[in-house]
Image (cartoon, rainbow over all chains, first blue to last red; front, side, top):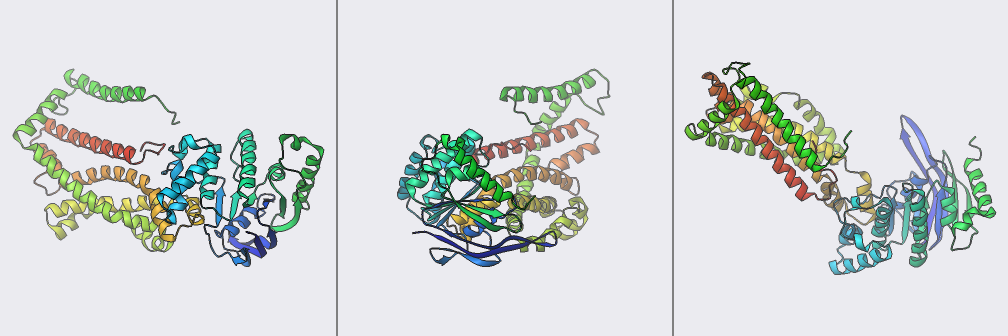
Length: 253
Length: 259
């Protein structure tokens, strides 16, 4: 069981001699094995909230806990995937995937076993000995996800991971992530500014309001899985999208 | 601007660039446009070079110069790399040390020569000290710059994968800075050549710079040019060695050292 509790989290920082409240009194319950998307206009603090969950940013007040244990810094039970992939250019694909395991002193044989499985699962076998720069953006992002998964984290935190991909690659990335999530049954928190993407991926969508970032509403996504391309052209999908867009921009214009 | 061109094209361009310099040199010297005293012909310079090696023990001058460079560069690099990494990695070290190096780099090494002669005399250690002073300070700043450019997300990812601070520093921060540091060493080796000659033009009795100065006393322009070209060729050779090492060490690098 891996649930995340965000309890009255506030985050302030100083920028150009003025205090900015990035997040104000944000509380959330993220259930075990659920897929949650954080959406909001740019500057609403959705990435900051994700980074606080990862332990990479220290919140000013409130707390985040994973299975009742308060998060005090980054740790291997919370894997992170960035939009920029942040693959290590000096390591081959296989070694990138095994990086976390090598930090914890897992034996080379066990590491190899885990990376082989992930390479197969993410369709990267023939690129095992390539360097990241030899791969396309979509493949690089799969390697970044495999690297996070190799550690068997309880939670996967993803910060606009498909933001740099073209539309077609992006659609197939969404498909494989959904597949991965249903196979691995891992809790995923996914930041995006793309409402359609959120509707395709998530069980629940958390809509944040901009400056200061507050939870405006938590929307349960009603669509059955698997969600196909046909869904995105349906009337219900259109309505849901409009409703969330209205929530995002409510009061801002 | 930096559009890729075929390797063959690039080699042809490089060779024809060099050839055109020799061609212009040949035209104005063999053609008698300038006096042989000011600018000797290529053959006269080649002959002077052979004579220097056969009769004036030029090879041992080259060896002495090379030894000074290796010592001066080696000392500079050995001290500058850890300090530069410290400045690039830790804010506190940066605040404490960066102003010192930023100021020191503007003091030309040649201005220190009189002082260094008083401190070290006119022997080897003074020559090496000139190189160290010329190379060390800017090297620290460039290494610091490379180190501080390590993408923050490289480290953040490492921590979310369970890295300790120590592992983050050694396995990500340092490893990520390594290609940039090797590339900077290549550039710094070029500086070392400059300061070597500066050092050898003052109070030396051996070395390429000394040979050039001595030739000047006898107005041997052919020997001066032979000496200058020798420095150029050796500089090019060491640069090439650094590039080969870079490509061997960092096969993943998209950019084969361009500076």
